[in-house]
Length: 468
Length: 62
Image (cartoon, rainbow over all chains, first blue to last red):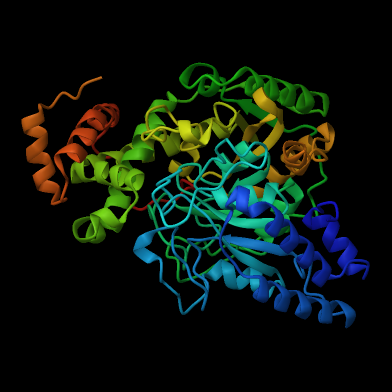
């Protein structure tokens, strides 16, 4: 197999007619065939579709009619993204024979950009229940060590991108489900502003907390993917009718003069992080300062307040989404999701409304705090990936979540790999920007990624070592 | 941690949800219910009555 390319690298080679999209797709298929029995990233590989997409891209390449940087790039979709004529299950027995008639808005947009669809990727059941061992498909494994958890719920996307079976993929993030697997699998992943990306055609979990976005190996690749994903769609009532800026052209502007606020109490006191996670954040702050950013601490309400407010909203909205099946096909859910959803049945209407009222106050608080900053910094995950068999039933709610504050407030947030901690497993930082300032996130995260240069180390090497 | 509600009160709450829970499933949820109680207590501290004039969520607060 060839070395794994980033999207930006592959796009340049394809544009120069130095890389065949068909050969690139075949290489990803070979990697999938070699690794997916171990990693379980795919629920449904679509090799025939991939080769057909790749041949079309190659024809355009030869004709000098490429559609852009995603033309001929192998991608995968989290299996809550509806795909016309291709099974979309939510990783659940409830929908194991569901074949949508129509693509999700974002699936269609990536297809129009010329992407090569490699297949449907595993997820926590309906983006909430996992890692589960009692579903029709097993949970994905972390490419850095298959005994460990990928994070979730975009778990298949995390495993597939990290191992190079796809160069990028779609995820969804209701309480951290893009940023968590990005952090634990050593990737870049962005949860855009609420309203930036349409959720039409993406199976819902919690309508006011759900966000759609991409995961990829680098920040620049995320920018390329989001560029082709964002945009107004009247089919999603929350989708913002705002122009999409050019995320890629300004990505190299650097951080000189930017004001960066550190929400230190989130990761030092409210949910203390592992030594390697902490060291990664400290080093990143040194890098930003060295590059000319101004750093200072910022204090928000306790993270538990954001967590309580966000989780109650998710619990109530998810229960409402799933209530008909919970009452009629309760045991067709996996045990984890069944229990997590059922807990939402005890959230009263008045509790939900109080959470919405509290949400307004917390949005105001964050807006006030961010007035003095361009970027906020926190941790993305508290620790390196735990063993997959040691993830608890209530893991998502028993400690305040580092990611949920920015689902609750809708602010764009990104996870970026800072290095490696215990067991050689990745650790990450979380960057947050003002609403619709994704380009500021990309510019900041890219400057960091370029400065530390940690994108050469791939889990493929670890997998190869394990196989020896 | 134990929930503030009794198991009998919790059984009544389960009935209201309409979910077909077994005794074992009910016990599992009862053991976790203190987390919900804790979250509700956190968000129901006094707030100005006019704080949310409309239940419309806009991340870019205007």
